[in-house]
Amino acid sequence: MKGQVALVTGASRGIGQAISLKLAAEGIFVIATATSEAGAEATVAAIVAQGGSAQAVKLDVTNSADVEALFKKIVSEQGRLDILVNNAGITKDGLMMRMKDSDWNSVLDTNLKGSFNCMREASKIMTKARYGRVVNVSSVVGEMGNPGQANYCASKAGLFGLTKSAARELAKRNITVNAVAPGFIETDMTAALPEKGREALLQTIPMERLGSVDDVANAVCFLVSSQAGYITGQILSVNGGMYM
Ligand code: NAP
Image (cartoon, rainbow, N blue to C red; front, side, top):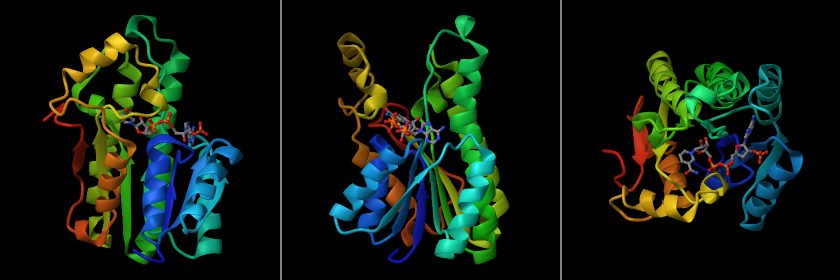
């Protein structure tokens, strides 16, 4: 994969940062995006410190005009885009009967529409090149459902349909599109879990631990590698057996 170019959204921390570091360690040039310049730059600094190369870009994936402009810039500056990892995601939890329109809309806009925005642009570049790898970061709760997360689960389940449709559209151009479905992973997103909730959660995970960001990054790294060239339209669960 040396010399390839990858774009990772939501790369400032957590899973997106781990994916960026792992891809860069494979010799891939990583365009690391986050909603703030400083967030993306922190990841780029970590990549450079480990001997890799990367570029920091401020990007809100919900802004389709900004997404389009960024992909045009990538073509003019890099001349290629081999890998897209749609990792940016947010939660706005609450019981459905009290959920505000704004909480539904912002989660769907970021997690689902944001991924679509990037896939629409990446597919134009990858179709021309007759090569590409797309990985969408979904969630185990997109498969199972979760009380208090109607918006988040709907967005993550929507990613499965988006992944499979894009996989069918793009397969003949040698572009694979897959999803990973992490279980509960130790990041800022899960740090807020109260101790009691965490204990109850661990009882539902056969491997009796939360996942690490590297567990997810390893799966993504495999799906974008040449070893996964005949795998498309799939959901790779990284959940310690929580859902099977
Ligand atoms: P995190 O630590 O909260 O990081 C989220 C990332 O998304 C940040 O880099 C954030 O950028 C970025 N982001 C948020 N809104 C954005 C927007 N509008 N445009 C661009 N970037 C945006 O999350 P995480 O736990 O690493 O999760 C990463 C992905 O894995 C998410 O899609 C999440 O749903 C999924 N996931 C997580 C878990 C888990 O247990 N942690 C489980 C299953 C799935 P800023 O730093 O600039 O805000």
